[in-house]
Length: 316
Ligand SMILES: [Zn+2]
View 1: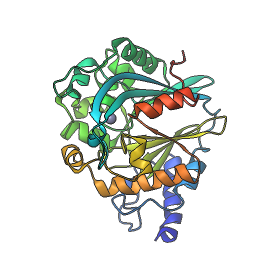
View 2 (view 1 turned 30 degrees about the horizontal axis):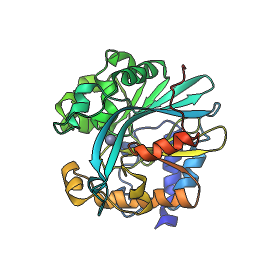
View 3 (view 1 turned 30 degrees about the vertical axis):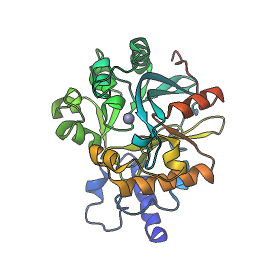
View 4 (view 1 turned 135 degrees about the vertical axis):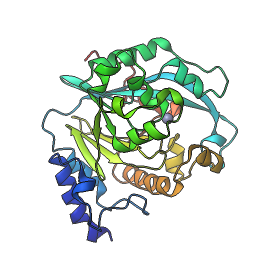
């Protein structure tokens, strides 16, 4: 199956890279498109991503920073099957990919009203000044990418004093826009079709290169519009931002989903998440990619201590 479809997938990837973003209509009637709801990614997905990462000219990024704008306090039992009652701190984060001459933001933080939604009525840590720093970084950035259409990732570009300015350089996928329009996670992040058109809306089959060293990887499951982001730095390190496919790296290393109640509450596709996690584990173990879940506070703290991620946003 994989060997049969890969040349076709490569062709799709090439067409995407050539800018034919409306691939679904272009390829209508063909049978061999990768069914994303199927059991796995193609075997040669990482080589495809690595090639795609070289297709946009320009210097590679030099470093990556992150900011934690808020925390949600959970238990491991709410994060992973058979998890303990021990505290799991969910870091609410935004990332800055720093180039010699500019930056790309990955996710957008959120205002305090949206943060409250995740507290289920409890008071939880929120840092207004850090979110303001994220807003300033969003304004400086050349491009903004969103892992998925949940409030803690996307609200910063929907509910900003600078919404119009940010929209013009924010990529949203058609699947993300559809959810935000028809089934937003909370009313505050609902997006009308008219407003949606002020963003850069893209559609792609499996991967899409958007900047030097940066490739989007479609991964519906946690939400319909979820995507991972691959980033290669000038120093050769390869990062894989996995959004909310797993909230903890333990989900990946142990290949364990969130508990059934959480899956049901979010409306996730557990089969899709499992094949994504299996692929993530493989590229981590065998290819040395640095895996970055959006919310794993303990892991992000360790990455910061190891110097893999910075914690101060660059002024560009
Ligand atoms: Zn999230």
